[in-house]
Image (tube, rainbow, N blue to C red; front, side, top):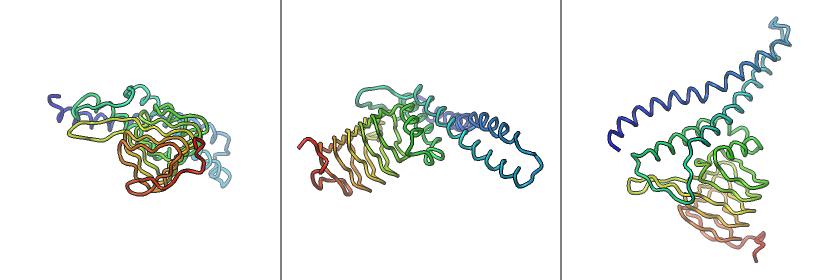
Length: 240
C-alpha cells in the first residue's frame, strides 16, 4: 500500500480520538445515574450526604464500565474480520488496519474488564466482540486478545491471567489464525496460547505453560511447561 507510513501516522491520531469517544460516551449515562441518585440526598455535605455521593460515584463508575463493554464490543462486531481458518495479509493493508482497530478497542476495555471477569458480563462482552462461547464457560482473564479468532467449547475454564492470541507476524505479513478449545478443557492461569493452536476435549493446559503457535493437544491429555509438552492422560477423559 503506497504511503502507508503517512496513513499510519494519520490513523494513530484517529485512534487517539476514537479512544476519546469510546471512553467518553459511556460517561454520559454514568453522569445521569450519579445525578439521579444524589438528588435523593440532603445536599448539605453532611456525612450521610457524603456517603450517598460516594455510593453514587461507585454506581456511576459501574455504569460507565458496562456501557464501555457494550460500545467496544459492538464496534468490534461491526469492524472485525470474518473468515473460516486463516488470513495472511501484508502489514501495510486494510486487513491489518481493521485488525489493529479491533485490538485497540479490546485493550480499551481491560481496565474495567479485569473487574468483571469471570462473570456473565465478561462472557457477554466476549460474545459481542466475536468470540464463540459454549455453555457454562468460565473466562477469568481480560487478555483473550483476538476475541473473534477464539472458540471455546462447553464447560471450558480459562484461568486468571491467561493470554490467548490469534495473531502473529511472519515474513512481513500479519497472520490471523483461529484458536479452538474443546469442551470440558481447562486453560490454566497465566498460560500463553499461540495462534492456530487446537486444544482438544477434556484437556488441561497447566498453569504458566506456553503453547506455541499451531500446536495441537489431542483429546484427554494434560500438557505443561515452556514450551508445553505432554505430561499424562487426563483422568476426566471420557474418550478412553
